[in-house]
Length: 514
Image (tube, rainbow, N blue to C red; front, side):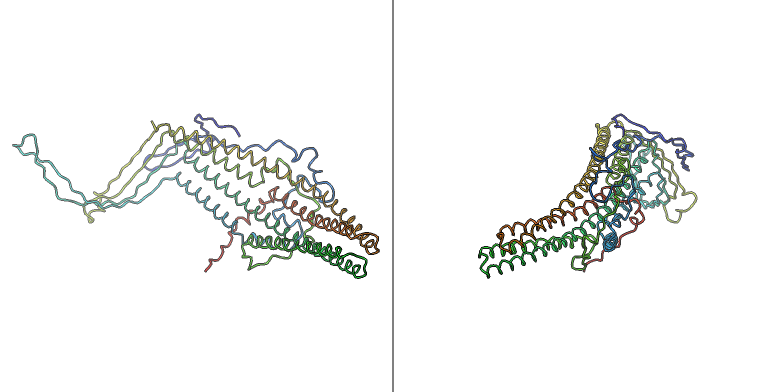
C-alpha cells in the first residue's frame, strides 16, 4: 500500500465506468469517472514462507501424532476434527443461540443500510411541497401636490396557496459522494469480517470450555484415585501401628497427606462449575436452565493431520486481518471525501406547481409556475479547516496502515506459538507418561518394602507424592494438547469463509423477561 501524500490526488476510472445522467431541466450531462482521492490497493501478502524459525513448519509439531499438513484447507466446522458427537451438538446450539453473534449480525445489517443510504446521494431528490402563506404589504402613493415624502397606505391582507413537486440534484463532479459510498461499503465489509470474527471466537471459546470441562473431570478422577491410594496407605500404617511396628507419627503423617489431597477437590470442582456455566452462557442459556454434556478427554480424538494454511494465504482468511484491511480501505476513501470538499459543488434544482390567491383557482392553467436553478459553490476561505481535514484523513490512513501491519504480525505470532506449543505438548505428554510409569513402579516397591518393614513411611510418602504429581501433570498435558490444537484451528481462521450461509441466518432473539 502506497503512502498517501498531502497534495490533492485524483483517481480516474475507465471510460466504461462513466455515468450518463438525464436531467429534464438541464438536458444530458456527461460526467467523467474522475474522483478525488486515491484508489485503494490491497496490501500484498508478506514474503515470509514459514511461521517459525530454525525448523520448517512441517516439523514444528514433533514427537507423537498429529502431524502438520502445510497448505491443507481447514473445514468451516473445524471442531468436527475432534470426532465428538456431544461437541458437535453443543456447537450447533451455540451458533444458533449465542447473543453476541446475534448482535454482530444486526450490526452488519445496520452497516449495509448505511451503504444504501449513501447510494441515495447519486440520484435526484424528489419532494412534494404544499404551503399556505398569509401576507400583508404596504404601498406608497404620491399625490400631485406631494413633495418629497409620500403617503403610505396599507393594503388588505391576502393569502397565497402553493402546491407542487421539487427536484434537486447534487452533481458529483469530483466524486465526493462516490468516495463516501466507497467508505460506507468498506465499513460494511469491516462489519462482515467482525461477524466472522465473532463466529470464530464463539466456536473457539465453546470448544475451549468443553475441553476445560473434560480436563477438570480428568483431574477430579485422578485426584479421587490419589485419595483412594492415601486411604490404602493410612490403612496400612494403622495395621502396622496396631501390630506395634509403626509409630504414632506415621499415622498422623498419613492422615495429613489424605487431608491435603482431599483439599485439592473443591478447587477442581469449582473449575468444573465455572467451565460448565461459561459454556451455558455461550449457547445463550442460563446456567440453571441447561447442563453441558459430561465431556471427557476420551471424547476428543486428535486428528491425524493438522491443516495449516500457507503464510501467503493466512492474510486472506483471518477475519481480524481482513477487518483491519477493510478499515484501511475506509480510511483511504475518507481521503477522497475530504479532498472533494476542497473543490466546487454544483447543485441543480427544478420545481413546477400551482400558486393562487384562492383554493378555487389553484388548479387553473394561469396558476402554473415553474423554476430552474443551477448553483455553483466553491470554497474560498475556511480558515484552513478544509486543508486540516484532509491532512487529518491522511494521518488516519497512516494509522490504519500501521494497525493493519501490526495485526498481520500478531496473527503470524499466534500461529507460530500454536505450532511450537503442539511440539512442546507432544514432548510433555511423552515425558509425563514415562514419569508416571516410573513413579508407579517406585511406589509399588516402596509399599512392599514398607509392609515388610524394610523402609520407613517417609520414603513411602515421598514415592506417593511423586506419583500423584506425575498423574496430575500427565492429565493436564493431555488437556493442554487438545486446547492448543483448538487454538491452532482458530489461529488459521477456522474456515469461516465456508460458513457464509450460516452467518447470513438471523439468530432468533431471546425471549423478553417478565
